[in-house]
Image 1 (cartoon, rainbow, N blue to C red):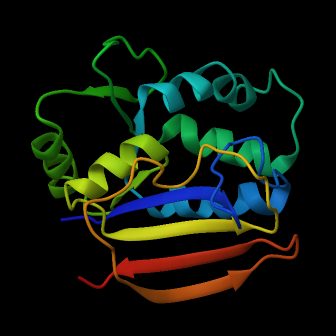
Image 2: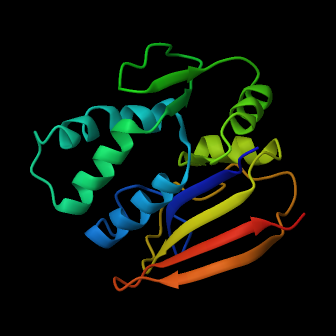
Length: 185
């Protein structure tokens, strides 16, 4: 069985707005490594829709982008992508699949059949998966910014505190810190 890893950009004050992080080559290279180490991506519909128009065009070379963004896009194109949605069932992007049925059962089945692990990058979905005790690892890229606005990490709350063990902390040259934690409880 693979681990379910929640990975996201977050500012020092907990903001997870995708426009607030440092989007440089080093950041994209970091997330490309994480994705390459996993067997599948898991997103909510909103995250999928934010990505489906832009990244395939980058992968095809239709968008002028730095090498790290091209590498991310090419890796993402090939990676199996699973989407949780109650309002949409058609996901035409290459290697995209609709995850249906009971969320706990469907995600546990996905973990069971993906020994390399599953990477989830949707904040709202990850919160719900954490409520279901399905998240094993946390890979937060903490950016040296205070935004003063949301959305914020775990904005909807959790039923109880999550105790975590620090696996690693890696500073990036842009001032962000890649934090890797594993559930302790």
